[in-house]
Each structure stands twice: as structure tokens, then as C-alpha cells.
Image 1 (cartoon, helix red, strand yellow):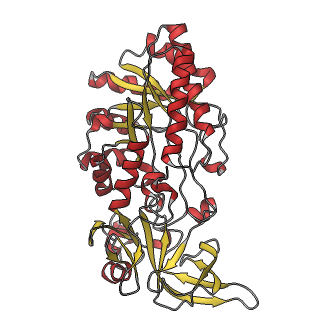
Image 2: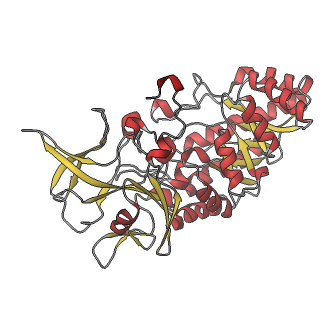
Image 3: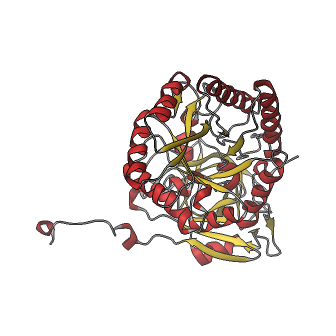
Length: 442
């Protein structure tokens, strides 16, 4: 079966009676006029549908905990929608913890992950009742036990391990291979377990956590990951009489940015994972563990688009034609960082025939600020509205104020209604944390 992550455009995308692109029943040209550009637009229906895809895909395994990877996009409104669909949350900072808390999320369904958690972040997680902390290293084990002791609370944990699996994705987003900053190497697990059992009385170990990468198109790799985790659980039971009952396989399912991308569906992944679990449970003679899975990009990416206004253009003699927009690498750094590719369309001319290859350039002072290379578009004019698809993940969450440019607003659309869920920054917002010593005032 297909799932929403295999689409480039939000499910509600269509051309309306006025000839403009529409998402969530809202005319994108009118959204640009009302809220300005650049503008992040999130389709609520698409988010809810991919959440349903995941739940339906994994319904044949009884003990499943869906944990949205908040780093993909974290806002109070999106967290409230995803929680309403029955998901928990994987968080990696105090900011993400506080955001989901303010969204009214059940904090027992939150897992705190990360390779260098601070004292204050761990203390906040304990105070707010975060359900699991995935411990990444020996320093954190000691620090976490110390903080838990100070609160007189026993903290429920997983051990994050490096499973030694490489997926064929961009090297910066491979997190499961041996040479990684994340997790305990397999050879370090015994030492960590012995410390927990013998020294760290305020930590309760429930299971193992691994993550094998991001924007993954392979499926067999999940089978390998499940076997490594189950095999380790069996080994720890044999050697330490330790009954672990949870595994967290991370997330990483890819999405379709361009027509050449062919990601598997949530149903494909579920079949692989559930069958691998059943096989390994029988092979290693263990009780079925609870399964945690952490989709992020595949939950939110397809639901999002970014609107830009076309500005200047430049025709290089005997070369490319550059079309500049009013955003770029500060609101979407992925093309500069990962050579990421996107699909785009003119929101006010969706029926016009594409006639010429152009390059979409950002407005920032970097030669590498290129959003899309060699895209075929209709005749482009100043003031046209460009809609870039599949920008729900890692655009807003990685946005910056480079060149002292304010961050865009974010709008949620659903049933012909639009609502601001992140306000556009103002110039006063931009300087609100600046201070000037009295001796420099003029």
C-alpha cells in the first residue's frame, strides 16, 4: 500500500477556479498577499493522514509506540495535531521539551534523546515527567544518576547503541555506522549495563535504542537493525539475567522531494519490521518487546510548502538564467548543506506550460545560496509566487537570521481556513536580545 510520504505535494493540493494553486482549501496567492513571503504553509489534513498511515501500517504488532521526531519541525500547534493523532514525541533539547509540554502533550509519552544533554536540560526533563531518557554515553549515565538522585526520582532509560549499520544516504545524516558521535559502541554495552546495575541506583534500564540514518530508501536495513537489537537483548538476559522489554528503532523513512525519489511506504517498513520482530522473537526465545519508532521527516515534510515572491533576474550571457526570490538559505539551508533538491511551481501560473530551465537563487550574500538548480518553469515575471514543495521538515527547524533577516511566518491551513501558528519575526524581535554597554551609546 502507498502512504503519504511517497507524494511530493500535500494531499489537498489543487488548482482552483481562479487558476491559482490551492492547499487546504486556501488560495496560495491570497495567502502570500495576506501574510507576506517567504511563508511556510502547513496542511493539517496531510499531517493527520500520514499519522494514520503509520498507525494502520503497524497495527498488526500490539506493542507499538509512535514517537514523532520533533527536530523535523517543532511548534506548539503541530505538536498538538500530532499528539491528537496518538503519537508520542522524541525530543532533543530543552526547547523541544518545553514546546511539547506547552502543547499539552502527555509527558510520559516523551523520550529525550541527544549526545550531549546539559544538566539543566536533564533537570527539566525530570521535573516535567519525561517518560524515557535515551542515554548516549558514560558521562551522561553518571550525570543523569546524580540529577535523579537530587530529585529522589528513579528515571526510566534506554541505552542508545551504535548498531554498525551503514545506509546509503548523505554522509552528514548517517547516524548508525561505527564511526559516529552517537551512542554506545556494541563493545561498550556490558560496561554501561554493569554501571547501571551496580552503581547507578536511580536509573531503570528498559531497553535499547538505535537509529540508522535519515532519508532512508532501503528497507532490508531495518531487518538488520531489529536483529541486532533483539540479539543484544537476549545476550544481556543470558549474561546478566536482565529482562529488557523495549526496543527503539529510530526513524529515518525517506520522502519524495523530486520525481526521481522513490521512498518506500510506511506499510513497506512496517512489514519488514514486524516480520523481523516475529522471526527474531522466535529465534532468540524472548517475550515480544514494546516497539518504539520515531518518524519525523516522513510525518511533516509532505505537509509543508514554502511560498516566495519572485524578484530580480539575471541572464548570464551564453549561460544560466537566475531568478531571485525573497528567501533562500536562511529559511531553507538544506540545498547548501546537503545539495538537497526540490520541486516547485508558480502558484499564480500553475496551468502555464514550462518553457525554460532557470536556477532559483536566494537573496542572501553567498554564491552558494541556490534553492533549485535547473528547474523548468513558465515565463517568470517579477511578483510571481513560487511554491516550493515538501519543505515541512528541516526548513523552519534549521532556519537562521543570516544577514540579519527576519524568520518567516508559518500558517496552518485546513478546510479553507488559515491560521498563523508562528508569527513572522519583526526587526524589533531581531534585536530584542542585543545589548549595548553604556560607554558605547551615542
